[in-house]
Image 1 (cartoon, rainbow, N blue to C red):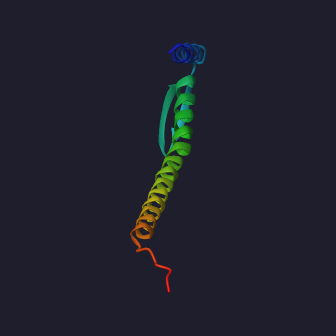
Image 2 (cartoon, helix red, strand yellow):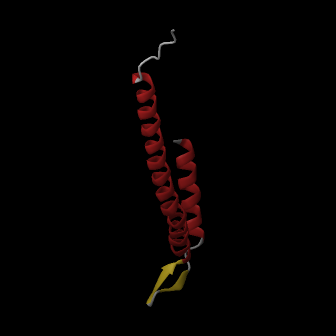
Image 3 (cartoon, rainbow, N blue to C red):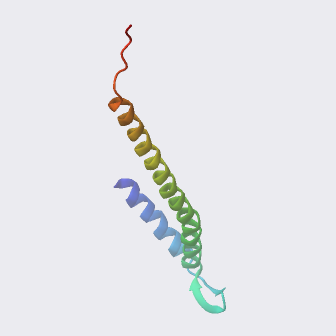
Length: 89
């Protein structure tokens, strides 16, 4: 909680110190934003570019792990259900 408050204070100081307006153009859209807001949008977009493929990969790996776990459980069940062979004359 204290760390969150500290990050919030640092972010607020950053926004207040970088309040000059800059022209922003993106995919044909043009506008003016405070520098700090433009930089925060860019940071959020960068984080999403990293997080979305990462989340997709984690979901893919969980599915593969679940398939392997289910296959191992079925193989173990088949081995346990196999009748004992008798060694006799």
